[in-house]
Image 1 (spheres, protein in one colour):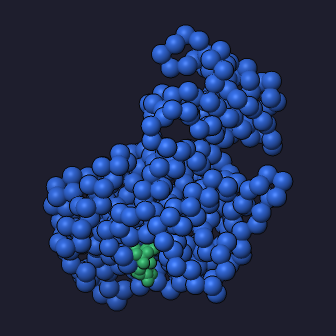
Image 2 (tube, helix red, strand yellow):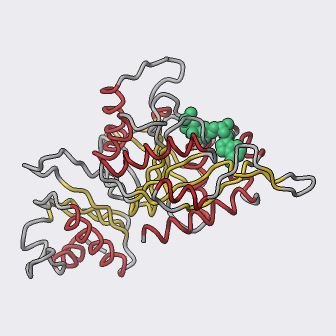
Image 3 (cartoon, helix red, strand yellow):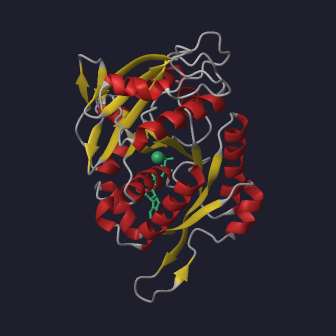
Length: 337
Ligand SMILES: Nc1ncnc2c1ncn2[C@@H]1O[C@H](COP(=O)(O)OP(=O)(O)OP(=O)(O)O)[C@@H](O)[C@H]1O
Ligand SMILES: [Mg+2]
């Protein structure tokens, strides 16, 4: 595909609610074609999220029909009240992973979900938004620092086993302790989202730090979040905490796709018996309490800890843990389609 052909496709797409096209309205600022990937820069002239979605979906569908991938980005609209930005448009769907409490398995889940989506044939990327304890590099087994493309003024994400990733752990010196304060966290997240040269992806997973603080809000304000998953463990107090996370997401206007009960049960590898070391709750009862659907109950799998520590989660995909992750990935695909 060349630039002219790409322009032709764009000029046949109507601006939602009008008979005129995107090009008639001068919405298309620039088009670049490189290695069969089309990069489109738009000036939408609207902050209306619905219109934006219709336009993006239509563009992706039209180029998709031709077997061509498309990266869409937009210039900042003047006069829009909230400073909502829309980074990482090269991903079709962006998913945030959040929990009220620390240590419930968010990072493990984020990496495992990314792997499960990859194994289901999708192009995937993961973003580590935990500035205090960036765990994603270790869990992916990626030790390299991120490269830079000086010409484009971009940071190159790391890639291993077909999984693209970016983390503060790739750009700051791990030996230098940094005390991160609100404004610094915000700036670091925005810059990593904005200046990373993200490839075309089907799913982009964001691992957030625990709680509903600066990081979660910054993510919301800087990219369109298509879905959100809340991680909890199966006990009453944890679920009560999770409710705060649901309210937070709803309050800031993020669609909660569902919740996942992590470490919901344990299967004894000798006798095959099921036990509930972290408590037992009926997912239905949690659904009622949180008001969002259950996406699955993930078992406690002793192999996970070591595999995650060694960046070898891909070596244990034959476990029940991963078959549950696959079914969760499938549910997420359906919910977000
Ligand atoms: N299903 C599981 N089976 C066994 N171990 C697990 C499981 N999920 C998580 N873990 C282990 O629990 C610990 C905490 O997990 P993880 O770091 O993913 O939690 P987190 O919510 O991201 O923590 P933080 O709030 O510190 O970011 C890790 O040692 C991890 O290996
Ligand atoms: Mg974590």
